[in-house]
Image (cartoon, rainbow, N blue to C red; front, side, top):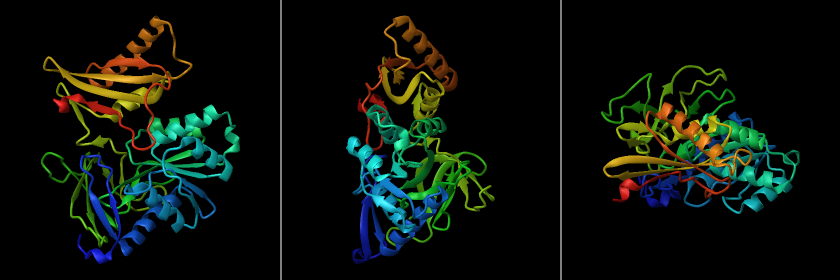
Length: 356
């Protein structure tokens, strides 16, 4: 900490994406600045004081719940502090209270969407119109899936605990990049190997705090891979924009010398109407050879007891993955609703090579 503990009014910790959780301290001024950044995000999404936010991020040490909560209150909106889990109650509250904005991970939003469909309650009885999704990587295909299932406008929100939490960056109505609140968090991109600054191409995102008091950081490596764009956006904002996060430099899988990001696999899955956006990736090393297996759910109307149909579908997906990734992937098609659902950050990659 850069101030005495008597000045720290809040302590959060990261969810441990990179291993051991990182503890972060905030002064009262830090909390105010963070709330302002989130208010900018929600305003860009079209939210006002007349909206009712259902915050289904986890509350507690994780920054998502309280971060979204304070940001929504900052614009004068009403807040339901649901936290994650208890999906039946989530849907009941959403329906009965008339929630208009949902804040959660995209994977949990899909779970909620499926639950609403299974409940049999007509979608037009819900007032939901805005989805604010973050805390895990998701693709444009995932966005379309969420918007179609929930009949909402789905927005990405970017952040990490060490910098502030959610609200470091946000999409505007143009949805062609994520604006970064660079008056609080100065961004750069570097080559993750040489650490040299890069411009006009993809690199690892680095932040320096400009206003934080409790735990200011200089050139903090996020491990997130993206590209920065400068200039005026069509929305009129001049804040620097970044592309959607491709993946993390420490999340990249190297399979037989080929760089593979889980987001690439997800994008392929969601290109094909036969599959649900629920999958698991398993990597192992057998006889000194790396192998990768993908378990993926079919949609109910695409699942068949006919082995020939499943084999044909398997071949179709395998060929597409081979074309995109440049390596062979063993595909295992599983029944709808057979993979475990997550109420927080979804764990999709299981690299067993690290266990040996």
